[in-house]
Image 1 (tube, rainbow, N blue to C red):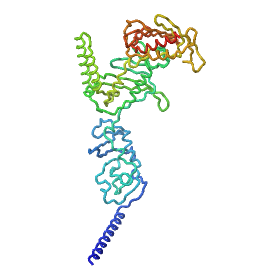
Image 2 (image 1 turned 120 degrees about the vertical axis):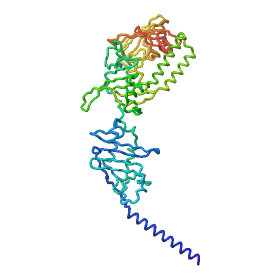
Image 3 (image 1 turned 30 degrees about the horizontal axis):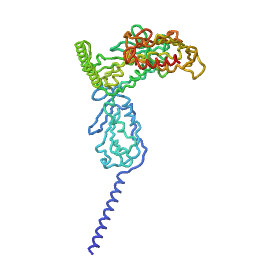
Image 4 (image 1 turned 135 degrees about the vertical axis):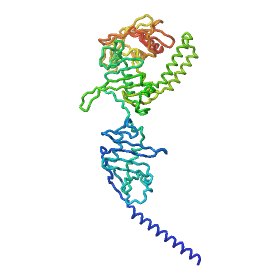
Length: 501
């Protein structure tokens, strides 16, 4: 009997629970109506917005930003000197130009269950006629869509989460300076340790290399530069990542601190672009580069100490002091703190040591040809060689054979020869270090190439012994550079192979 009573009681409790669950479910359905929707709940013209602010939490810290528009220009509320990226503002406002939803939950009683009592983000906009507040809640556990409230009593689920766009910091809102792609450079001015200009000129009479289009204007002369090096230098400027700013409104004191009141290098690039109508427009880009004033002062002091030390040793540097100097150079490279400034912009950016080194490599020696001979072998119709006081002449004829070297056939003493090893060795001769030293040792080899070129009918290269590792190259009677002795040996062996066969 007792067991029977227990079963009856348990059945009664179960019935009450079922009725309670049914009533709760029925009540929830009555209170909150959920339906699919492709409804556009906000249509705010970006041009009509006068203020924009938002706040959210990231890594336990609250981010709060506010901007206002005056006379069509956006300003940061806390500092109107801050250069606002208006394209970023436009992207943010575009989210509510036609803000659509995928689900609507109506007659909501408990906003907390959607994370909207304490929203993860709040976005506020105002126009002349209306204020808007958009609250962003939790993600839906089923479809990972964001719960949103706009204050109309409903909760919405949205596929396009506004927080994907609004989770930005003040740094992201800064309008960085642009580094352009230089469509057609007309000239480059370099001011710093070396002051000179570079002119762009096609088919110049100042070179025998057909690829040369950039020429350094130094001491009244026009000296050819390596086109690939100049192009690479310009590309490095274009690729600069100007985002790590240290100040967006530099004072005179700050410019001096960053070494930009008197920069180490100023690069001015004059170039042209095409407008929408295909007309050429002249443009100018200016970049200032410098290390911090503190580092420059420290380097100057270190150099002065080194000079005093060298003088005390009568200019004789021991292996120990050389090693110390090398270590000091390595430490200096690691400690480089460098900055750039675009034109008269008030923004100063910090750059990496690698970027600094690349930008400072703008001297004539950095951009000139390293090759001893830059002639195109297709333009050479005769080569005179002197080796061990014996002279040899190689002649050429144009060939219709597509497989012929450089479109030419080469002859020595009337016999056809293969010149590929000589060409390879001659083209491989490169400067290890440029120099104006006069040769003092014996001549190893010399050769003169005769060109189909009205401006440069011939070029002479003389290679002198220098030491066990290097030879001194003299081009057209002027000292040029120290080159790897192994390369000169390869050239001599190539000549011997031709004349001894």
